[in-house]
Picture 1 (cartoon, each protein chain N blue to C red):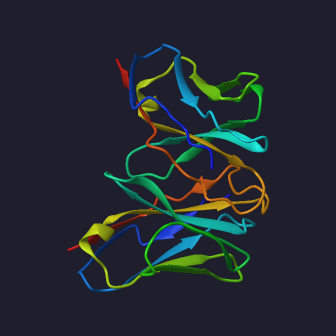
Picture 2: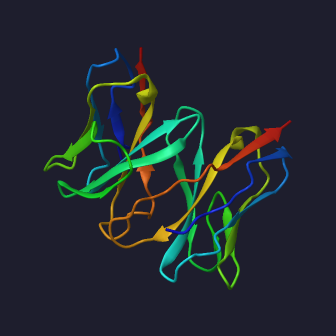
Length: 111
Length: 115
């Protein structure tokens, strides 16, 4: 299973764009990159998933360089409600898989 | 559509007792996974079930067990509770049998306190 490394915490201000980078040097060919968001006392919530290049949805963008050894979650114009822990996961989409969550990145959005 | 439902939301048990937690996945989802979350250890994978079979298992002692029923509902059981078992237990379901890591939907969890 590919190990991921993320910053422990980040601070931002409302209205700013936030970029959280995740390193996954030993990502395998069949691995996808998935990001989750978690608020206190709630289960993680799926944000976005990608394999290569760029993926965008209504809440975030995911940038994956050609070597796929890292990925960057981009949150445009954050608000106070985006204060949460963000997890980067790497793994295959196929078959039974022990999804391993790292420590995540605690994002604090200030007014 | 209804999300993942976990019951109960809160539970207080005494050391040595056993506990059963329940999870109802999203309708049509056949994969159910369980996680334990504590401040010190973060989110730790317990096990995953698909079509009533345990497909993956994490590194937890045998006191932790689970099962899945034909309607995909799942239960996990912890016997001989220890203080360290106090945690938020999360259940997640997935729709695609070949995409265990694809778009998990988590429940709100069961907060277990062992005293």
